[in-house]
Amino acid sequence: MSNKVFLVTGASTGIGEATARRAVEAGFNVVLAARSTAKLERLQAELGKERAYAVTCDVSSWQSQQELVRHALERFGRIDVVFANAGFSGGSSFYGGEESPEEWREMVLVNVYGAAATVRLTLPELVKNQGHLLITGSVAGRNTSSKNLYAATKWAVTGMAQSIRNEVVGTGVRVTLINPGIVDTPFWDNLVKPDIPNELTSDDIARSVMYAVSQPQHVDVNEILIRPTGQPQ
Image (cartoon, rainbow, N blue to C red):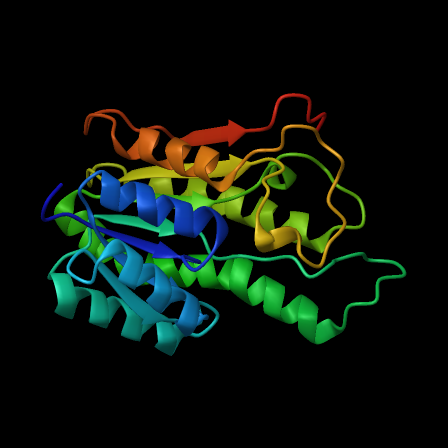
């Protein structure tokens, strides 16, 4: 893996940060992308500037993602694995919710448009290198959930992953949808987290990502759905 490059969006905290750590441990060079420059730079310093490269990026902006890909190629010359992981929920009730329409708009732009833009801009490199695309979905993208526009964005990601895999058949690109259940991450900072004992950690999901990536080239792990023991839905 010494020359292979692993690009992670949403890399400043949670699942993205844990995956970046695991990727460096596995021998990848890593491109760290997120909106929080300070957090990215701290992670870059910890992982080592020769192996990790921080790029401030707003995935809801096409131009920002173009710059991300340009910087990644200028720094490392290639992209082999892409983890389209950036996403959030600011509360998303359809009736009686307090969030503004602009908060809804931002969530859809980040969770759906942002993931799609990451894919569109990096697939040429992945095809060139017979690489691997991973996208963060959610258990909420597999179950019908009331009061939840966030879940609808993750249903969109579920369909996106299936569509992308169909489109790249024959190119050698592998596509994996990662569907976490309840994970103890900053995602929940402004939300009410269900009371689930022994919730997952970010590293649990990162290890699932690396499991898919580490399979032989002829093995395409299409989907991983991972819940903490005891989570009902």
